[in-house]
Image (tube, rainbow, N blue to C red; front, top):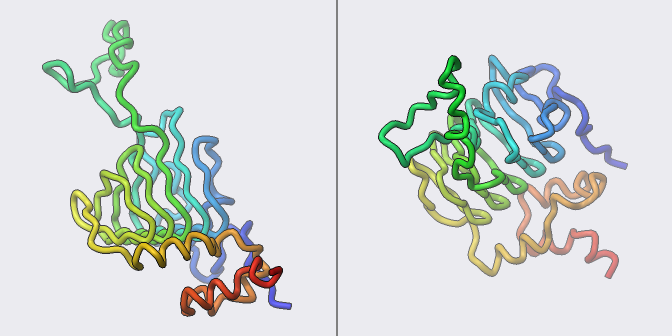
Length: 216
């Protein structure tokens, strides 16, 4: 019987330490990552939490689904990056200490868009930036250098600064079928058996391979 890849191994490609699985790497309770999602960086792969998730002071979470591919220098800016914009200056004086810290109430209650949520099977190109509170749908592709400031639909392809929808990978009807198949939720053994269908088959092939279709 085919053996699935191990989702608990930090370096799934031992000869390529630049590739790390994020689920066994991250420690912060504010970051949730699904199995097999990975990050690729030739210099700082294991420093993902410190170098790639910025201004993460909570309580908002970063949630990344399963089977996501994150290229080098993907960055998630969290809500802690916000500054006041309703007065003459945006400078955060209370954080600098001294008697300025007495005015820390000026930094509370800043606007927030909530958790940043990435679906399953999302591909991030090199040097992409995701702004706070963005939601990225399943099967999306984020082009290299994109700055994602708003939500991305399922199977959408976006690029640019700010990122714009270039097109969707499938039509609306086919996207509905793909979401219903939800191959990323199949048991690992079943995924292993049908890797070729998942990577190169048709939607009909995927539907036929789904575990529930066999039960029916």
